[in-house]
Amino acid sequence: MAEYQLTLPKMGESVAEATLIKWVKNIGDKIQADEIILEIATDKVDSEVPSPVAGKLIKVLFNENDVVQVGEVIALIETEGGGTISPVPPVATAPEVIPEVATPIIADIPGIKELVAETIVAVEADFNQSDKFYSPLVKSIATAEGIPLSELDQLVGSGADGRVTKQDLVDYMANKGAGSSKSQAPKSGSAESPKTTSKPIQVFSGSDEIIEMDRMRKLIAEHMVMSKQTSPHVTSFVEADVTNVVRWRDRVKSTFEKRENEKLTFTPIFIEVVAKAIKDFPMINISVSGQQIIVKKNINIGMATALPSGNLIVPVIKRADLLNMVGLSKSVNDLANRARQNKLQPDEVRDGTFTLTNLGSFGNIMGTPIINQPQVAILAVGAIKKKPAVLETPDGDVIAIRHMMFLSLSYDHRVVDGGLGGSFVRRVADYLEAWDVNREA
Image (spheres, rainbow, N blue to C red):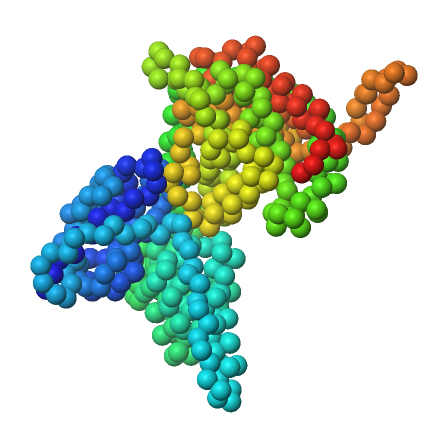
């Protein structure tokens, strides 16, 4: 027998440690290659760590809630062979890539081509179409057993945040084979599943439900309270005429999507003008350390993204000022999609220097957002509404129907005074109002 040393995998250039949140396997359990052993977390991103080898888990070196450094040995796995196997760091499964499946050589047998074609279609199911996260092992089993994505999405898993585990899928197939009419895995607390879900619900006084906060909601709550305790918040408001922006986008969005295979939303437009305004007012792009002000060289803009769970995460577009509209659109769409699928890497939610939140996506016209520490400002953009507005013309003032939007900037009054905060949000509005309707996308 040999011992394989399982190490904590690298999860990004700037991520040095992670919190061990759950051991999926216990000492003595048999483990297949690529089967999930434990769940880890860095800030707001959770990941699963698979085993690169098959064997038996014989020792765990850290307990749940311990903070572990990248590269540290976290468990020993007994495998076939002799000696000690040097660790080959596995890769956490947050960012998954589905390998291409080569088309096999098909013999000239009646009916075999149709059978292989059906198999290939099943193997190449696009799991990116689902909002749920599935481990490589679950995907492999589902594909091998011919379980379509629509059916898989209906399962209620017993893993963290309701994730479907291997055992859930095995139980489901067993029930399905026995003629069970239920199309979901056993729920937590039943005799068939000893595991508990991450969000237990209890009935109180016959009517009220008590819902335990999940880990992400606890982190958000702590971060928001800390921000209000750290920074005296002030919010400045500006109303902007974004008619030129709306007309430009309406003119180019179809051509843009056909050419780039990307939807052109308002978010990359907002990010472009915010980056320009930050260059004009670099003291917005700072952080505070004790009595020192740190001026950030890079402009890294976070975009608040609502998740299907109801939680919030802020992926960051690094060096946003260096990207054109195509680059910004691709970054925005990619990060937003992977955020909703729980596939962000830890590096992608770090090192933001300014945050943008779009209240308009929920139909809100304005708000007073809480600063995303350690930043000193956050901009909220409201819904775009058609309104009558006074326009100055050479022939006098006229009233016209315009596309109007409120901008609200919350800033840290320790280091950002009203002059700077008000001037910055006004500059953002100026850039939006001066948008060139004739520019190319």
